[in-house]
Image 1 (cartoon, rainbow, N blue to C red):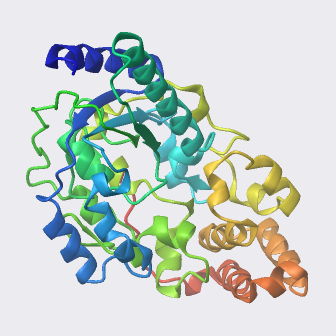
Image 2: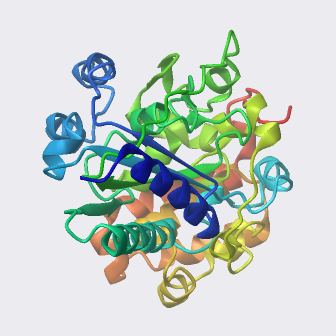
Length: 379
């Protein structure tokens, strides 16, 4: 049986390797999540997960990492910064003619980027151990949003940050614009014994800035009101009550991060995969709306934008166009889409036609819009 110093050395080497692979930090935790289970269950029992019923169905498995991968003793949590630049995204969000896309989705699909590197880290760990201790059994498995895992509690236990009031992990040195991944292993690596203290204090900026008031209370997000759910996971129409406040957010939302004071220190991506493609960091709503399905499929190949299909892409853009300043070009584009309502695309998604009609009505009669000041980051 290898000594504790053997595993301490391995952990140090893994940390160096993780940085070499493009990760921003690494930490190690055990699999004990009992301290987090009551809050997780209360969140589910109160229905805050709905309409994502699978979250309740997977809760029991999420509470037991060692049941997901038998023999697991440690979870190596990793974070990777994805923000292409600290500048520019607020300007896009405040320009009603631009399409705002969550910053993590501008480049290559992060699942592919992180999974490949976590697998390489696991291979490095296996090879190092086998070379020095051939008799030691070693098992490991990489995860990136690919299984029921309480990744934020595990990351908090591993010292990568604290769970903020917006339910995201916040790091005192790097803010929250980063992605998480995990490497489960049976090796008894030393634990991180100094988790970061929660430093949200009395700040509630992330809660009050939310365009759809999705936070019922600190740390309690109502999924059905979240713009990330409405524009991505939601496979049907977007409720009328949310359309105006969604503004120009066509894929996800970063408001609760952009307003967070800790993101003054947000880390910038060290991996080229997060570089924006096809001018998606600063593209006009109308330009994207004019993409046909073939262009959409070509330009989003290997991108997280493929989490939505072409009809949902048009749905989200139509809402953005409905909220944009009135323009003859926008009106003409919407009328063109409406004239194609008998196409196979519209027949498969009958609700899409109604979104075009709503946007056209907004464009043709802008004076009928509700006279209320929308909550905007940066104002």
